[in-house]
Image 1 (cartoon, rainbow, N blue to C red):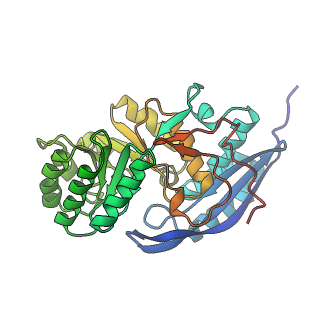
Image 2: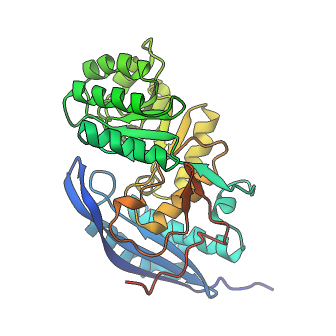
Length: 354
């Protein structure tokens, strides 16, 4: 006797969230985040996802909406057909694949991270605080405020101003926080090779552990040369992963660390496959968000919880939003995210909330 596959319903709902302050991207300044909640329903078991396109990282808002509407048109043929409809649009695929995974984990009465990983229980994952490219005084205040809240890892944004100003900010933060606080620097591809090479001496003397994306994404050879310098600072690629992929990065020996952004990669399942791949290649990794709403942020926490011995990751980004999609189930304390242990994502039903 065979049983028929359950009917699957798929709905999307647009949203717009205000940012607490303008955010600079390669495509310009944004003040809001627009995206879609995605809901899958089969056998009265719901799954929720979020598609949050970001200029310069994913498809456009309109392309995301069109892809999700195409998925709705074919969902009667099954979730595989729906996923195929969003294959070329990473944010849309993230939203749909997350909703599907949330439904499966909810049906199995397991937290999403256990569904993604080996089933082990994980209580917390370490997180970093991000300090934007601010004035010297504002940078030091933000850094000390973060450490006062328990963060033991700080990421300083650089690359948008004069090099010496950036390096002085690093020096002053190092002097203002405890020696055991890990420092990272993220240039978002804003430095030339000469600037990055010059910066490494100061970064090493200031105890900076990771220099993230110092050069433009295309400069794999430059990143390899920085890795081969005599300075003890790991080189991480973020934008470079999206442009080149793991194979090219590995072949070029261009990175010590790779940054995984599930929204830009096309979903937790894609990111989880990369975790396995990077682990086999002995390349370290971090998990970060793309200024997402609570659904995608919580999903990123679950992904990090599925990574054994994950390093402090960029998951504490909710304060970048002035409004959100619903209550945040993740508590941050003492520099760690407390992982939700409820079934699925662990998010209350937020579909009907404004």
